Image 1 (tube, rainbow, N blue to C red):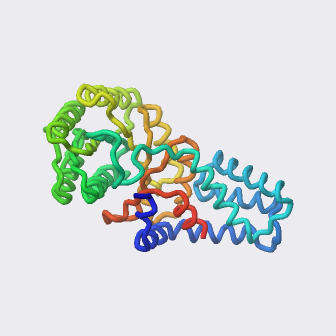
Image 2: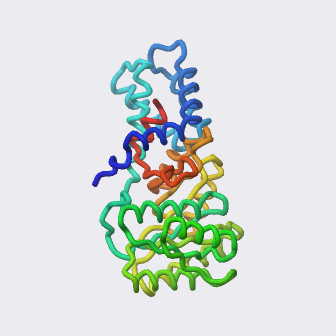
Image 3: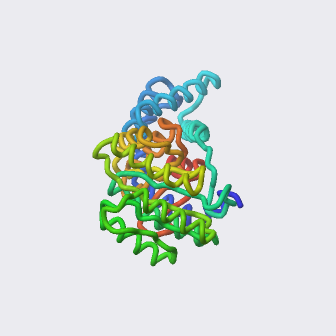
Length: 316
């Protein structure tokens, strides 16, 4: 079943509404960038560059986009400003397509192996535990048996929140006492999941950037313990980032990609912020596909990321 199943009218409306502040900001800036101009020239491109940078796309990614558009302008000789939005969307979609290497593209896809193990990482406060709860909801809704592991044992609130989500969604949560070894929790979770023929295991981890070496050691230990039961686990290391923090999300991505082998991204809290461009920049700069975007508090507001629909919404 294709990814576009997830973008019915309700999903599209949620996306448009969630990105409304970014859309308004970007559209007004682009309008000003081309004001009084009939064709795309150096001044328009300079103005567009400023628009993208101030929309948190990031300097390096902005330069790549502008270079792509410059090549189009040189090739086609004359491009009027009315065509700029269309070309901008095409080039950004093409840029994002370079990073699309997902093992499981949507919740209903057949899993490459069971149990399919997802280790979720990210700093505290980005919506990590909430994202896990929503993932559990969607996987269960798709008919999959899900186990959650509360391996963020340093914060009682994180364990309690995950337990609440487990009860709400109707999936088991494996936990231990406060301060327990996170790797031990991961071991127990995967052991239980495998014994009960579960399809998906999602492991929460501590979100502290207190010390990069300690973080790396902790995540490596969790990974090694997982592999005693499922040799190729985790199949997915999902980094959750808060889109509303803009450039700070780039720094978090830099730290976590150094600490562990992140291979997918979830970018949350895109509703209520004008910094939605960060989705484009982070995916491009770190060469990691964005898999999910969070557009609100409801479970349905966690969406599978589709680059075509996202870019169309953002620049229309």
